[in-house]
Image (cartoon, rainbow, N blue to C red; front, side):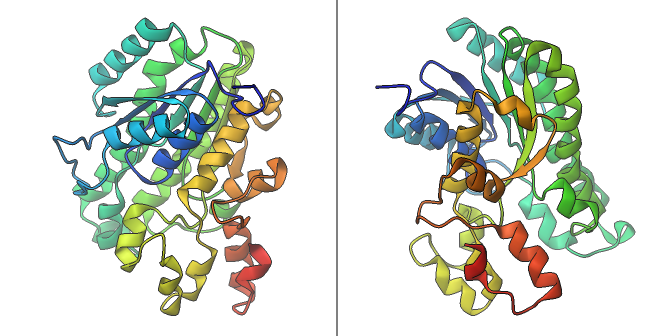
Amino acid sequence: MTTETKPLAGRIALVAGATRGAGRGIAVQLGAAGATVYVTGRTTRDRVSEVGRATETIEETAELVTAAGGEGVAVPTDHLEPEQVRALVERIDHDHGRLDVLVNDVWGGEHLVGPSFGRKTWEIDLDGGLRMLELGVKTHAVTSHAVLPLLIRHQGGLVVEVTDGTAAYNATRYRENLFYDLAKNAPIRMAFGLAKELAEYGGTAVSVTPGWLRSEQMLAAFGVTEENWRDATEDLPGFAIAESPVYVGRAVAALAADPDRARWTGQSLSSGQLAAEYGFTDADGSRPDAWGFMIAQETDPDASVEAYR
């Protein structure tokens, strides 16, 4: 093992919300770079969360991290419960006495988006809307409050707030409905604020968004698998720009391994942007720029996907 092949060897990371999708992809790629990765979530082999998917569990994610070359540690955690998050921090502190990377990827609200898609605020079920804010905003605040005292114990910690959309894209576009818009813009602002607070500790805080993500849940919605995902483009041609969770995972791993990552602090970044900077590709060898394509498509409906892969 060398620092070239395992640049994160000896580093300790926490991926909050690592059951599936971007969180799982990030955890596995941090493991591939040699990190010990604590993975959290509400779906275990014994219990299913409100998302209702028993097919992905945090234990499975931890096993994938270990198989990739790191050490995966599954800790069932509801990030809306401060005492559970504090117990998680105490465990990491007891085991290692440090934390180098915090990835805040808690969400689990996709089942709430569909019924409220495109609806006015007063037309949306209020409990569902507020639940989106709990899952996408409150969980991140609870986690940062409990975890950051351990992260700042050593200089140079990294915080990654995972969201949907870059600051530039979201600034002029309304994201589905008021509650979803708030839930996905809040992490961008959180990263900006935490960058200010972590500066004196040499810390870096950024927000990172994948593009159109081929998560397990998304593939199931289109009735395809990772092997035949392009079949979905027959009904939705734009899906051709979709990326796998490996891509955003490699983006975060590249950030974590960059000794000069502080140059990004406070910024909103995308997997495609970071791929162009660090030179990695998606699992299939392509380098999709989903946000660039979606912007181009707004003025040119015939924009070529291939020009953005």
